[in-house]
Structure formats: C-alpha cells, structure tokens
Length: 174
Image (cartoon, rainbow, N blue to C red; front, side, top):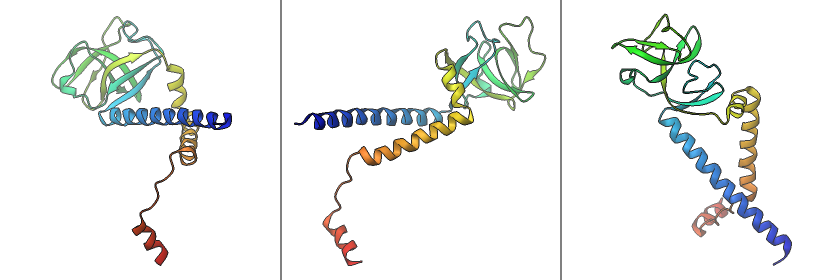
C-alpha cells in the first residue's frame, strides 16, 4: 500500500469517527431539547453560594410550577429580564424568591405566568463559548460549519449503494 493511500485511509477513518461524534452530539441535543432541557448563561452573582457568576446552567423548561419546592433554584421573567433566584416560600399560586447574596426576599411574588423553569445543574466551563454561540456571529458561523460538514459528508462519506436492476430498468425506459 502506498503512503498516500495510507494517509487517505487514516483521514477517512478520522473523518468517520468525527461524523459519528457529531451524530451522537446532535442526537443528545435533540433528546434533551425534547425533554425540555435548556441552557441559561448566568451573568450575575445572585446565586453565588451555589452557582458562580459566568456559569452555564441547565434548566428544565417543562418543570411543573406545582412541584417547585422551597430551596429549589428557578428561572423566571421579571420586568423583561430573566432572573435566577432561590425559592424561599411558596403557596399554591405563588412563589417567593430571594437572591443568595441578598439580605431580604424579593419584593414581588412569582406566579405560574412568570415561571420559566427549574435549574437542574450548572458548570463553569464553556461560558465564553456559549455566550459567543448566542450572538448573531456565532449562529452564522455555526450554521456555516454545519453546511460545510454536510457538503464534506457528501464528498467523503460512504458511497451510495448501487440501484437494484428493477429500478435501473424504470429509468432506462423513461
């Protein structure tokens, strides 16, 4: 086997591994999206005792308002902003929240209408990447990279199977 053929075989193997990794990531993203898991980028320090500033949170958009408990960290909409605070008290129709860094409870209640979701977990790595990904430039570049991946898959991907003879006959008649 020639050196050039060996390099081509190694590149093809690496590309196939990359392709499988992309497929697995896309599948996991779709699955998590269907289950209501979303990302939220924390910019402030209101929950700094558990979630430091510049962290990426995973929250459940499908969380039930009625199942939120005291001590849970939630996201809600207030005055056009998304806020992440901890629940300190609740009734059947409202939640009282507080920032961990604040001395007093928030001066308003959160109803089901303002409730966005319940924070499940967080991680501190990736803040810059996810912040960039939400910008117009990040969306365009990611879309462009995905389009190039699709094109490369057509060039380097496995060859299409040969058509059966009965199908070839249909095209020859036409």
